[in-house]
Length: 245
Image (cartoon, rainbow, N blue to C red; front, side, top):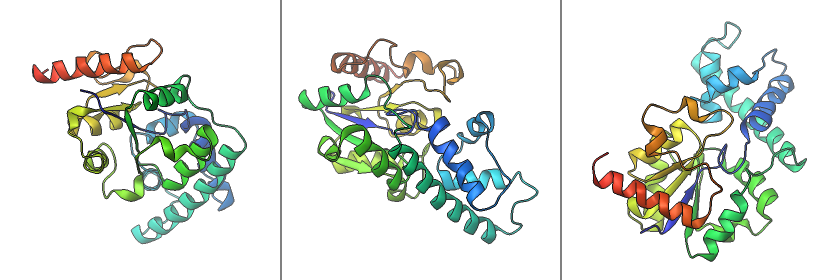
């Protein structure tokens, strides 16, 4: 039986990546005097790496003008990431990022139906604290029993650690929850934790790019989401898992 929804944030609750985080990274590069920039294509490639600091380090490994030593790169990545988070918070405050259609209503419908909810993301806590009050109001935490962010885990998605921790905090078995994700790494993390997934494609993770076999197993129906739709999808995922599919 479905008892809880486990929400990813970036790309799932809101389309934050292209016009939020990417723009903020470019502002951080300029602030630190770096002649670097991530266009939409390059940022899409880097999204295969989870975590902003980790993304920066991955990009530096391809740059001839990046610091030579690992220690220097780590220091620069920390400075850039802190600057990026400040710029991202400013973009959110300016109203540049909206929730995906139907998401906020679904959260309230789920709460009214007695479903427990958690935020299960590996983005920075400061990003969550900037975005969620803007979307749901200052009392947004009343909707979520658990809020887990990148600082709460040693290993980010696609590692299942954040899902394992959320289940432990909620005292639920994996099959009693439904993960709502938009990306391949997020879906892999939930799958590794044995949590059924509704994977809703986003700007950077369109349905055509999902791994072969995921579209029927993980990808939710394209109709408007509602609690009955979630329950139906969860039951279908559970039945497939029981058959070993």
